[in-house]
Amino acid sequence: MAKITIISAGSWGTALALLLYNNGHQVTVCSENEEEIRMLRENREHLTKLPGVPLPADMEFTTDMERALTGRELLVMAKASPYVRATCRKLAQLIPKGQLIVNVAKGIEADTLMTMTDIISQEIPLANVAVLSGPSHAEEVGRGLPTTIVAGAKDRETALFVQNTFMSPVFRVYTSPDILGIELGGSLKNVIALAAGTADGLGYGDNTKAALITRGIAEITRLGIAMGAEANTFYGLSGIGDLIVTCASVHSRNRKAGYLIGKGYTMQEAMDEVKMIVEGVHSARAGLELSEKYGIETPIIHAVGEVLFENKPPRQAVDDLMQRVGKDELAPELWEK
Image 1 (cartoon, rainbow, N blue to C red):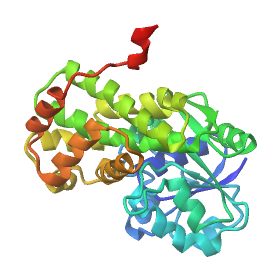
Image 2: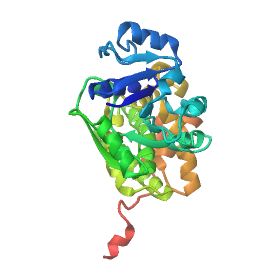
Image 3: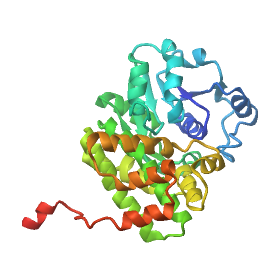
Image 4: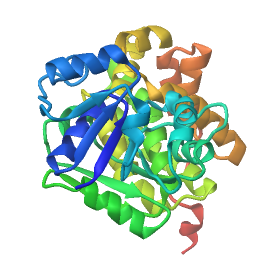
């Protein structure tokens, strides 16, 4: 049994807390949101973000950060990506050397173009930072539905520890050394999911969504390779796997926001309606800058950026994508074989 603290009491943090509790670990959920912690204590259920999922009577919920971070084998950073840096700055003085922190947030910081594990490592340099990512909606993990995910770490020993800690009969964990690829896949898929949702809102069909998914993963892979990630990562759970579920699922906040945009909502109106962090909006800005920085062509990400930040009509963005000059799907050199 390990002593584990989940940092954040949102839907994903709560679902993982329940998973880890059911695995036999001692779990504490810590948040600065006193109202949310009080609700969890009194109702033993996250009434707004994970309704219908009962939580154990002996699971601890607290706002006392210092107490929650003391003597823990594992910390799980479940804050939404825009708040990870500020949270790390508050916690840095409380975390001992060598502390294992597993990041489960998905996003790229727009100002610095840093991934979440890079941010955690920068703000808490003495920590051992890993990542857990893949196709895993909190609503389904909380209900114990079969889910498969990947743990990334700098060394195999850490990855195996994370795997063994989270692994259960309904939660299968693979390991990988490609932290960068895992995080890029988990972040940039939200941008493509915005496009997929917008296509749904416009009334387009399965053909359109299939095109966005397949060409979207091609863009993410090109960019990821240029940044130093492994190509095979994007054909795995944190790449195509997470992209499929986020583009298709009714649980996807990014798809929902895109759907509303396709129906005529502005970006801000869509985010207000979703009532949760739409991380694809933040990742879209970062994706545009990374594409420019590394000289990689990413037409779907670029089109999403035009819709979000330049008020381009979504239908016009689709028309422009469809009417681009013809391309080879594979390397043109293959014609010469």
